[in-house]
Image (tube, rainbow, N blue to C red):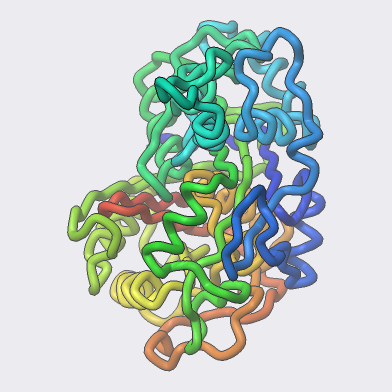
Length: 397
């Protein structure tokens, strides 16, 4: 892969709106998880809910896209001056030379859930005000951003569960390399909904306390919501000290619909492919942001995979104890956190984790954040069905 500049990034999660809120939380080892009070959900679990999403109104021109997911999408877009950076790139490259690649898992499904409450009691028909194509349809997120930003280049939504918004980096990079586009808005948006919360609870995967990735007593995930974006370009005026996408690796092990391969074989393949893509050896990686969901099966499989590829040297941690598992937005959110880590020379800790599982003892797992010179980092995102993606981000000399 030819390196691509992350010429702008932004992130919004339960830690706050914008990069400064996330930078401060990483430094403090702070979590944004709270007991679940979302909508009508009554479950003994903790979630990462973004404050103020419901108060965000869509512009009148975008009213057809009204749903929680799109409110969150625009809330995040406005942070860190990111929207203006994208508009400047559109002006610089041309509207038809910028692409939009978004990742999401449930998209605007909450809008469908709300519509079902208003079904006609006689016919079961959904209310006329409900528009699936502009809300629940996964492509509606990409369409919203293209319309709002005046982008006419190619657009795509990737929905591969929890690897969705990591894979958009790889998809965009391929199109830039092919010459189809010159720049790309990439990212992920996933918002809380009843289907996700009750669905993961039915699988007995949600924890009744804040999640504890890698912990000996870990007992499940904390679901979160987030929106995060990056602008990918070949270069830029301020690129000397910026963060670059150096490589991406993807695999599909198809071991099970919801469980990872017990030895993490697909995860190993994705990490090895990312290293090859970046032209780096395993010894060049200075930090690994683990997928680290805090389920016994995931953490164990990923631990074996990381040890097989990197041994015990590389510091690693999961930031999901801070943000919750943001599902389709996790890849983009954690790429943004890795960009902060690179820029600041700081290895994030693992909020919520108390005592590392002895079975993961081979990992150089960081319970607390620490300053460290970082040059290359790797971020893992693994989804249901064995859809895996690893990204290599770094600084260039």
